[in-house]
Length: 386
Ligand SMILES: NC(=O)c1ccc[n+]([C@@H]2O[C@H](COP(=O)([O-])OP(=O)(O)OC[C@H]3O[C@@H](n4cnc5c(N)ncnc54)[C@H](O)[C@@H]3O)[C@@H](O)[C@H]2O)c1
Image 1 (cartoon, rainbow, N blue to C red):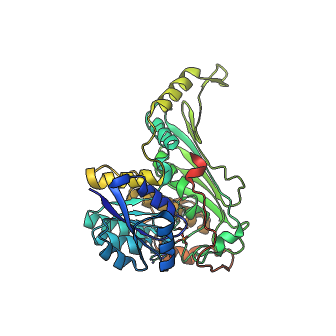
Image 2: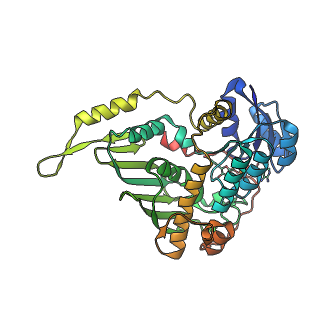
Image 3: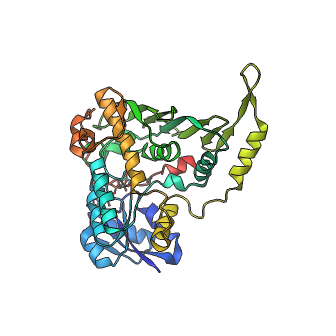
C-alpha cells in the first residue's frame, strides 16, 4: 500500500521530512504541504520537484488531500492542536520535537492516540543513527556492566540573529530555550539509554542572547533510583558544537561519538587496560548491521512499519513525554532553586504551559519578529553525532 503523506509546516526542517519520505520509494507519496502562506508551501513543493498541493489551512488539507500520514513541523505551540486534529481525522502522526511545550499538552496528544488507535511518533532522529543505535544495543547487552554515571554535553552555537524569527526567544511561542529546543535531542538519548531519574537539580541562565526571554545555558544533575547519576550541560555558546554522551559502566565506558574504554584494577586499584573486554566490545559493536534508514528517514520508515505490520515505534508519544518531563523538572528546579522529585503531577504548576510561562525567569526582552529568514539552511543535531 502506498501511504499518502501531508507535511504541515514548510520551514527549515521541511526538506528533512521530504527527503525522509522520499527515501521510502513507492511506500509513501507526499500529497500536500501546508504553511501559513501558500507561497512558502509552493516553494517547498517546487524546490523538491513534488507533485503535491499547497495549502494554508491544515484542517482543509487533511480533509481534501486523502492523507493517512501527517508530519507536523510547525512551531511547538501548535503541535498539540494539529496532532490531535490529525489523529481524530484518521491519520497517523509524526510530530517534530519538542513534542509540545507542556506535559498537559503531551497528555492530550497521548490520550487522542489511545482513543483513536492511531500511531503517534515523536521525532528523535538521533535514535536512528547507526553508531548511536549500536551504542544503545551494547549498553543493553550487559557486557559493559551496570550503568553508574552518564555525562551529556549538549553544546551548540547560535548567533543572536537566531532569535530574530518571530516565534523563537519567547516562552509563549517557543516554550523554552536551549534545554527544550536543542538539548531535547540529547535528553531524549539520556532517557532512552539511562532511564528516567528520580531527582533533578538544575541551574539555568542567559549569558549571550540578550534578545531572548529564554535560557541559553543550563546545567543539571540527575539522581536515579538505582543509585546512579547523570550530569547534563546545554548551551548555545559553544563554537564547534562538540556534542557528546558518555556512559560510565562497571566494566567499560561507552561514548557517543563512538569510543570505548575498558580497564581492570591492578593490585593497588590503579587501572590497566582490559584488552580482552575491549576486543569483545568492539567486535560486538562492529557485528551489528547498519540501519537501513538513518535519521528522519529511519523514523518515517518505522512509522510506516508500525502502521502496516504493527512494528513497535522507535520513538513513541510516551518517549516524547518522558523527555518533556525531564526538561520541565530542569526548569522547575532552576526556577525554584531546589531539587525536584519526579513525577511532575497534573496539580504541579509545571504541568501546564501557563504555569511554566509565569514561573520561568524572562531573561531579556524579545526584539526580533521576522516571519522567515531569506537564507534558511540549517544543520541538524544528527550531523554532529553520527
Ligand atoms: N529535528 C530537528 O533536528 C529539528 C530541526 C529544526 C527544527 N525542528 C523543529 O521543527 C519545528 C519547526 O521548526 P522550523 O525551524 O522548520 O520552523 P520555521 O519557522 O522555519 O517553519 C515553520 C513552518 O510552520 C508553518 N506554520 C506555522 N503555524 C502553522 C499552522 N498553524 N498551520 C500551518 N502551518 C503553520 C509556517 O508557515 C512555516 O512554514 C519546531 O518544532 C522545531 O523545533 C526540528
